Image 1: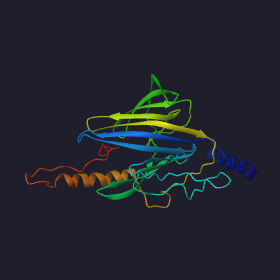
Image 2 (image 1 turned 45 degrees about the vertical axis):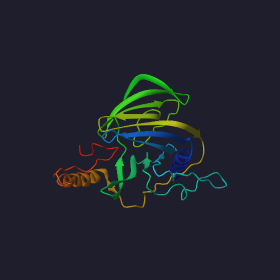
Image 3 (image 1 turned 90 degrees about the vertical axis):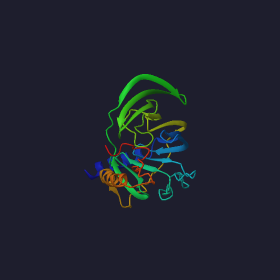
Image 4 (image 1 turned 120 degrees about the vertical axis):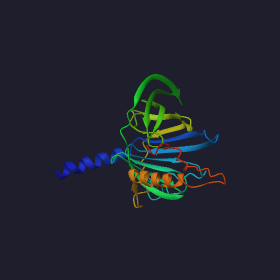
Length: 247
């Protein structure tokens, strides 16, 4: 029995080091209320069992893959925290870890990788020579339109988006408050031995439900604050990704 268990562990350990993927995306996001547009490079690295997604607002990418002489990544050198939004997805535990803020206070958040109810459409398009298919969903209060490719059968994509039978290469979401488009610019698929470390593993974390409760409390407190001589009030600005966090 012990021998069989060892073989199973070795099998999954080997799988975790196979079929690595390295995707560079370009994200264009627009705050429609203020007519402000931001262009950001984003990076997704994964090995089927976990992935790291970084949005490079600081123009200082932290997700740097380093290998030793045997071609194996030293997990202590992979990534470090900075001001860039960084999401770590653990597909084994079905969790996603990231950092967010409320009133300039930083919180490390742990959330569930939800089973998103995707609707796969007939529309197709070609992105970077990959045949892609359209899928839609409503998630975290927003409507999403994405294109994924079965030619790369990896269940992953930008941000928290997962759950399709192929890698997501394009994401679109638009409403009266905000809109954004994330589109793959470069893809590298290989069998490199990549080990991804969870940078939030040893940090103090709160659940998304707890984060949401804190956010709602601060939001309600801010509604009653006078912001000018006319007595006008304005609620706290809502985060770009999860505009409807109060739902």
